[in-house]
Image (cartoon, rainbow, N blue to C red):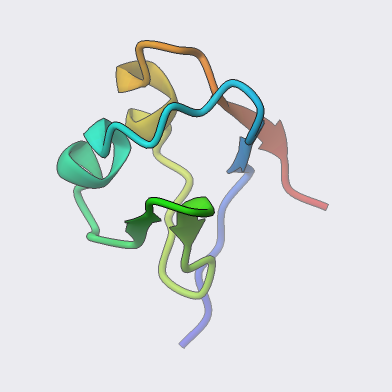
Length: 67
């Protein structure tokens, strides 16, 4: 099974505070926040909905066009 999406989340790790809000709000459960690294997104299952980018209070996640 392959996910078809137009946009995918992109993380700016310098802006990320590792708060875990993106992980909490991801409806697919594809984000895992590692304190040393930040959010790791499993793009195999991410549908590109943008909830993580909308909920990030630090604007560390932006949606970019899928290539």
